[in-house]
Image 1 (spheres, one colour):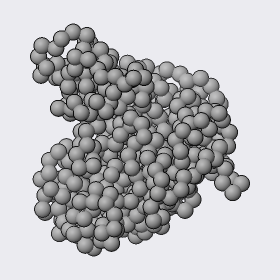
Image 2: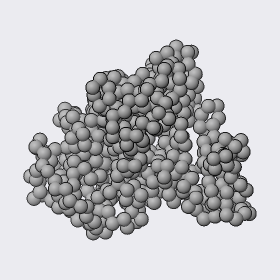
Image 3: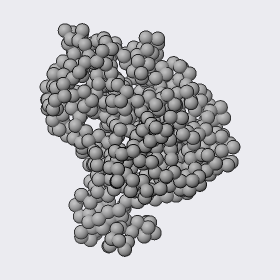
Length: 568
């Protein structure tokens, strides 16, 4: 199992650096000791509060090493974790806490007062000292405990509300509990982590990924990309709340590598960012294509800056032909991998090495070949909808697969598919169903992505609904629209992706108001500020256009095609 592999590296290479962020380092020995202690304390608190096994815990922060300790500690104690980046607006974090039913928030940062007021238990300002002990202000050190293999049962009871740590500090662990027995880690069919994505109703959706799904992913990418055990450095560019980070985090930890995190301030400062690259010895580059494109704008971004890089692993958005070509030219000794997959299918499910031959043959680029234990099938959208509605999402259903060359909706089936959205059966039934293949029933997910197969290769051809990917982030346009409609004066709102050269460049909002707008500049500032209270920065439209009347289609819906013609 995954945790056993991570623990084994602590025994084999205790001083090996598991994580580095700026000047902060975390060894494998420190990761094991601190996560063991965290797990023991979590289990003890959960048992005392009658918290059922599997109830999620929010881990709030950015790129701190303490976040990794919290992730692994949660899993060891039998609780899935929800990574939430500290750049997320407090109101959205409050939503995630509320809809997830999280019983605890752990954070290396000081948690905003708005979150303290949720009534959820909060342990914040966690910091690892020079000896590798995890401390909380006013609390004793987390102390090391051993974990027997036998699993204990935690009674299923209702959640409780307890005071926040930063209100009434209390010991996280005490010496007399050092011999306490705790249950085994999260098991294969239990939820390992939950990542919240944009929701069309205005409420975020929590994608539940089991340990089985995560190990299915790792059992594919590790042999496919062949990292050298305990000798690789993986770039961590994406926030831990973005599922792309699962690739670099767990590829690194499962192979005894070092995760090298760059934070948002470094990314905003190219000089500092490139200095970090130069000292990093990165061998595996994991990022969105957009991040690489920004780096490629500097001519010094080449193999002399990153002489050890072996592979570029891209996922989360379209890898353009131009970006891939520049990388191959500037890093002749590295391979460029184009991966595809939604959060609901555990990071990625297809990959293809982009070679000069592939560049010559295809534009746009294919997203590759499917991992061995999964299926990606192109089906008719209308048939899918009718079949899922008829079966209620629970009955086995096998829609007809479209022939090669015909566009349809991409369906993913296999052990890597999510078990559904947390506490959201309605959305789960719309997106997930059972698929039977050779007598085996798998979970299947309808992606909403248009795709086709040509020459045996899969091609992504955009979204079939109003969900888009921008700079690697998946965004429900309906969520932005719903939040705009909640703002004062806004009568109706439509948000559209604006494309340039076949790629989404930015979002534009089209607004009708209940009264005339006298100063558009001031009105736009007010709209942006209002959205920032509920949405992360990447979901804020770049441009706004005020309309006297929203164009409508004959069936009474906003005419999005007409709006595209009216873009500024």
